[in-house]
Amino acid sequence: MAYSQKIIDDVAKTPKSLGNQLGRWAIHLDFPVTKIARALGVSRQTVYNWFTGTEVFVAYRNRVEFLTTIMQTSRDADTAWRRICQEYNLEP
Image (cartoon, rainbow, N blue to C red; front, top):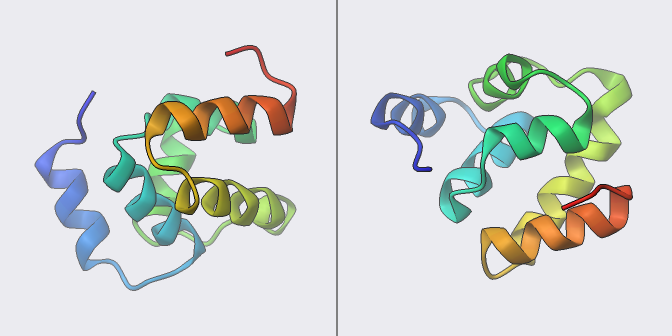
């Protein structure tokens, strides 16, 4: 499921922040927002808000940083999802 051009453009023009970095990697890997939201325990809208510059809540910063690191070091979305499921004890 590819990201819409509007989301891609919004993420690209947003100043870099923790949430924006997550968005850039998600777009790069074509990693679904639903899976990010599931792993972090937030709504999809919250993830989209983070992608476009809303500050990541303090309670979620470490998890978002860790998730971003997993995405950066994964070759594709499937590999990233397997690693995330393993780290967060989620069912794939």
